[in-house]
Image (cartoon, rainbow over all chains, first blue to last red; front, side, top):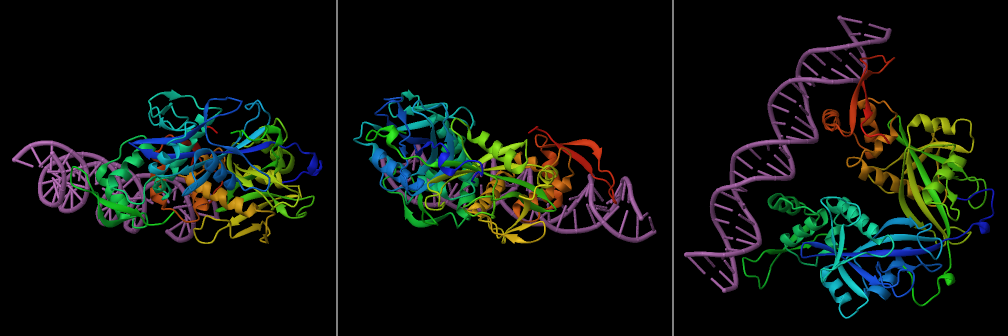
Length: 238
Length: 238
DNA sequence: GGAATAGTGTCTTTGAGACACTATTTT
DNA sequence: AAAATAGTGTCTCAAAGACACTATTCC
């Protein structure tokens, strides 16, 4: 922790930032919120809605503040730390350490957050094959690809890798779904994260047998032009 | 990333440190290297061999420097970042951010590093049941339990959780083993990480069938008082 | 030969994949 | 009735666990 040679006060200090990636799933694809940079460097580029950390502020509090002020999001059900990036030479302003986070939310809440704010948008992530590096393409709702600022494409690739690790070992990815959801919605969400299709039958068996994961509600879909599916709910609240 | 209201230079800056946990496996248990603190705060306590990061220095370089100067380790085959801790109010010297890492090495190299240095020691980690939080006990080679400095017991618990995540999905835990090892050594290492015993037969089948993980060498144990086991080697070099 | 651990062969159980079949809704 | 998706039952196959058995070393 400390070092006997130098006094504590002598050490140089970096700037500290947090960069949260807000994720959701919709239409069989993963989406994230990006914020258009208002100042140099990389002014005008789409970036994760990050912020510098204040003294005495917890990292998670800085994440919540960034999401509130830049992405119009007041609550996030699940937030997890991803990775600390040492941006030596990568930010022209100097020595900046960025701690990346990801947050998971139902699509409806993200849609509400971006509606009416021109500086915030939803972008879909596309991947080559089953690679888990940076996303191959980041495309807006108009279908146009964008190049995110800084190393934010790399961070987004790491989010997906982490989500794939969590998928079968943790209920957190259910935070991407609304309170009530069908097995079809759940499976297409899992498929969006994995980037491949899953066997319908064994998926149903696996998740319905796991009572600690989801539970049937006895309620059914409304207003669909086919047999309505039963709605399920997370067993553990988030 | 940035913020339009304030100038970049106005932001307060934390001190930045790295805290690597050097892990090995021996005698069916997980071990780590701790370093006796020479200065306040928590002088005399056993702590992870960390260091403050210099300006212009990559985090991984700071980890390598800390391991070299404090733990007598010149090379580490595998190093991975764990987590960034925001120590608001936890370090009396001020605002300190610590990025925890873990490194994996064969027991022999760790033994050589601690031999003859009174300020560095090997400590075994013990856990209650199959919990993956902080270790229940951190005990020295003399059997005496110690209370690590700061939140370092918590960091060690997180290392074990990460190792368990990596165990079946990555070859990295093989960095804990020497160049040549028996299937018995490999299995007891896996058991030490998981905190539970594994089926001998299915373990053998699983790992020997995975040619991308380990390969038989045709060499055999020497100087054992029973049938010598074949020695295996990692397929992918570290 | 006895003790000890290494390694093989095989039976059983479990879960995933495949697929045929039934069920329920709208048009 | 046709179209569409929801949900069930069952067969097959692959991997894990259990366990009996053989193999090779030192004493």
